[in-house]
Length: 90
Image 1 (cartoon, rainbow, N blue to C red):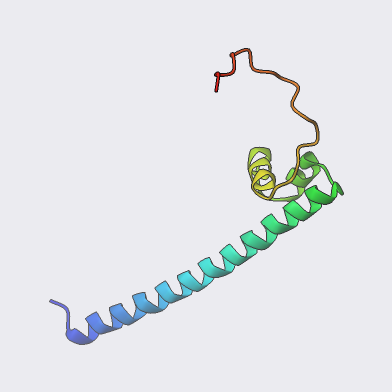
Image 2: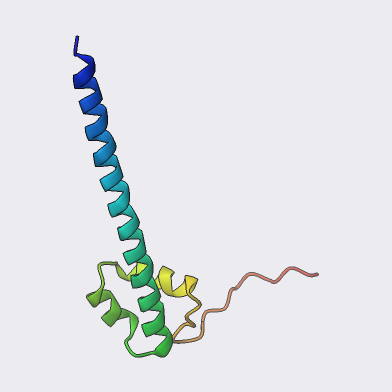
């Protein structure tokens, strides 16, 4: 059986490590939000295209697309495919 001092030291160590982890996680989330906002800004201004942005950031192209769509970036080209399904009558 471990002593009460050992148990308290273990609790203190884990509490400190958990606090450090949560602090790092908060910083990561802030950095992620800033990066996403930067991606939206660049794509909205049409300074760089999605392929170039993808080469510069740690995300795959599909994720850059999701970020841009969520940020309201209009597509580079309008859709050309039309659904063959009939539209329902209102």
